[in-house]
Length: 172
Image 1 (cartoon, helix red, strand yellow):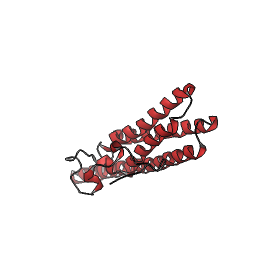
Image 2 (cartoon, rainbow, N blue to C red):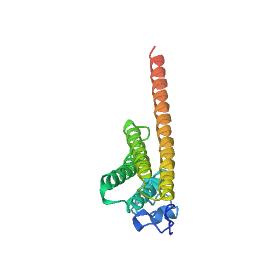
Image 3 (cartoon, rainbow, N blue to C red):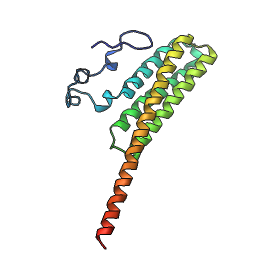
Image 4 (cartoon, rainbow, N blue to C red):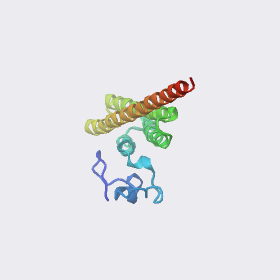
């Protein structure tokens, strides 16, 4: 399956394409074929596109702006990597929520770096706007994942307190 980048409309590098088992939708075969659950998440796919688009958009920046370019790339990779690490943790865990929060903060940092580049005229406005749009979509998806973890944590607490109440009632 040939995937294209939303920003450049060019074919994505092989590393940015879905593993064959996931692209074909074969349940349970992701890890055996080298894939992980996180690769199925829309948020991860968008985070990967944000990373690729961030590198592309910053390629033409003048040499004096290498610090902003490096920070943009670090923030984009941090969003992707923290999302992946959080996705691999236990449902509803505090660590899972923390990794998603870090990923969301990194996505905000990407947006700020893109805003700085726009203010300084470092890249064509349409290219920056498209990358920022991807970044905003990532932020929305990460927000949804955080809400999901929060609901799981609340459900777990309710379940624990109802079990504790039932245990104390039966001990009377």
